Length: 356
Image (cartoon, rainbow, N blue to C red; front, top):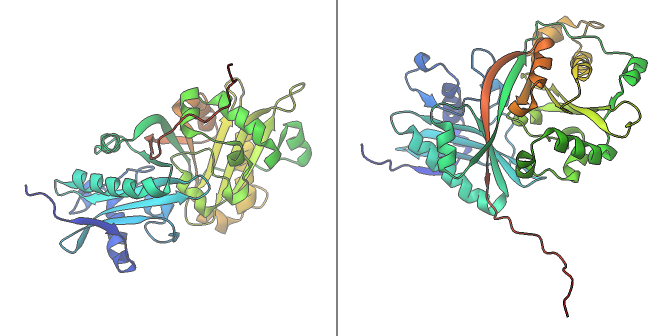
């Protein structure tokens, strides 16, 4: 086979129709299209949740500073790479990597990744990606210098499952649940460090200012589903430890209520010896209250529009996955999470005693 003579370039507005078709093909069953398209396989099968609508690909809510690359060959687009840029942490996340497979899709996708890594070297400290372990995805990124540091299980709770009622203020206080505040940053950092293996914590390298950000700016901790948080209203809640350690936190809950045609989102961090079931049920009740789908309001139009709830659980966070299954979540997919450092880490300068 002769080598490809195509080129990688930034996408243009005139590419919109071709990009939309390529992105849709990447989510279609392999036997349902003439051209098979290799993709990241995120986050679940197309029969369960529409990934195209989940991330509104490719340009529905595209930000001006988000890079979008295409592979053009003989005036046709054969590949697409979309990146989401986090300006607060100078990090990029690859949220889409597609290529039409005529025997050389692997080479097309590798060239796209190499091109965006060259750009990221000037503008980002690291590049993240999450992908299903199929179609050579993991091997492709490891060939490009990425390191796999974890795996996540994706769970989905269908909209047909009833949501619990929001507890009263007194019941919430008795359960030691309250909204998270910027002053919780140090305790959140300690909670994360206690629930996360040290090698993973060093790789993700969250700082106190990352935990201080609230509302739409608060997008840590990272998961395979982080890109959908751009299209949601974010809230954070904490569960404090029982007396006498009332200043410490037992668990953290991140709730994202979707503003678009996509599932809602829950994320929980908990101490290994704590049962977060009450906090999970509280998160479900918050979603029901915010959307009008809870038992107190039963807004049937809202229930028909509801797309269910998703969550991601790291493999080392077990038995947290069992707690989600107990409240109606079902396992959908397993994904790998990888990262590529674009800067060289060096030791911080420090003062040393002078020797005379």
